[in-house]
Figure 1: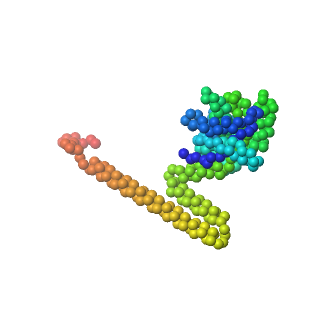
Figure 2: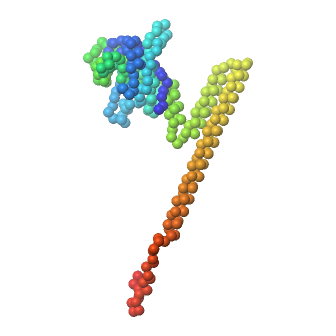
Figure 3: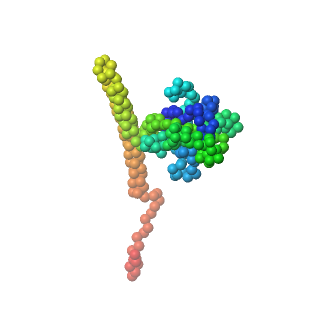
Length: 288
């Protein structure tokens, strides 16, 4: 399972119908979330298509939630909700293409018969928080014309303002998916190795260019380079030995099977007698 990093999906504040997200709703949603109880899926623009090949298909699953206070730069502490998801390839590609880079949660303040809040869905959208606020204001002032009414699981569900998501939030899942490609494990491992090396040297360039700090960083990078290359070579060597052993075993099985087939082709069954040759009668030659 390829999991993303935890990233912020909601902050206490406005919704699409004029309600305010209460702090306790977010803490309850984080505490209550359990994929085995009700798994929330990632959709596009709060739409849920019945067709799996539609652009509005599902784009992943929510694995876990957590709530933490956050300061958005105004000195005020607000409660925020963070999600960890299992993105499908389509969502990872959207993030790489910088499409649908904001998220909006679908929150039921009194889910089922629990009486407490639960996050029932997560949407990706192209509407940033500023534009989203305009939509929220319109929906609050014109409830009968709320553009989101038809997309809710039930009338009590509310949609939040859109919060930015970046490709970096899905970077961990992207790397895991790459490393997990079947039949290409070693190639993926080498890719990961070179990515790791690149990160080491990027980190090195941020240190002091001269003096002991820069020298120590260079020495550390070289040491890490040696360890990484050695580990990759050892894994490659072990994989080669394993494949060689498997090949020898297959060769032996083939040889044993061929020996059995050859014996069957050249050995007559026990008690078998050849049919007498038909040479014909004295005045009647054989008609073959």
